[in-house]
Image (cartoon, rainbow over all chains, first blue to last red; front, side, top):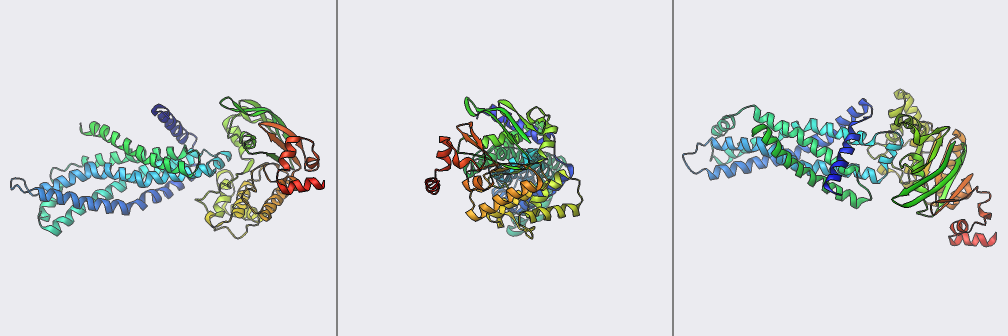
Length: 246
Length: 250
């Protein structure tokens, strides 16, 4: 399949997803269900990874700041910038494309090969809307929450290093976290998370929906979903950065 | 009643169904038989509207399905119950959720009425008391029966079964056949069954059509199928050694 065919197919599946949706009540129920499975269940791993990245970032910075000319609070400042601008919204989204994206693609793909999607279609139900739309809405809504947790966990990781090593005083770290802070930093991170949530859920839903064959194809498409989501996250990261910060 | 007129289905240049004409009457079990690759499944998918043929007409009652708008097709779909080869049980629901799903989507019943209807359908297929079981806890035969319960939930006029006995032991297969026969006669449904199972043909085949290389090769019933002179049909039904021995005794 050429890139052009792939994009056309994706747009057709999205058109089907957003037109003629099933009952609002049904969608709403599904959205809550998906917010739990895709979002809340991701929180432990997100917080764990973010905490350790925060720790690692802080260790790296602290041990490289040997010059007395660089104020100690710079460590807190850099940790905040790294975590809020890039790590939490972008890198964490790429990691989530592995966890959430492959799950969505495998779930819908398995339904396709076991004729569950055919069963929905013959009942007169728009299967794309019933299966993909709630996942997109749920993940777009829950992504800012996940990213917020990731930011706090990362910054908390940095704080733990100030407690443990004494290289950077805690007060300097907190001063650095607040230094030159503008609320737009967080807004920017959350806007990115909305885009990336849509990218992950829609691309993964698409790859699940187009599965033809059996278990092998489900596995292949789950991998494709993860890889393509990551590629588009990086591309949109560049675009959004240029728009908001360029 | 379902009427098929001059149905032609091609995949690229390959003709998979060649000018099929037939009629399926209500209150009868109609069996579609044929070798793998003869066009049975494509035919059923055309009947269900999952595949659109290149030529031909398909009448549900007096409505030509292919010329209807999407919403009109949807109304006919609500009158269909389909049991897929795999059962197509929704694994995100338990047994009750599966049967209740079409009721939630298309009926105006209140909660109690829905539960009563679910229990009625489960009782019809001998699955009473299994409401809270997950699909992974069901055997192959139970999954097929659950699929039938879901298919009859909205009291359909048309019932479709794709290989309902595949993967089942002979006793379970007989149970499913009896269920299909009883439901058809009790609710006067137009029932179409794709099958390879010759036991089904003999037991419940009130009308049998035989597909051979994309053509409707033979039409009849279980009364006259064993006496047929049609070579291809004979080769098909007497392919097994058990059937060969039966043929020798005829």
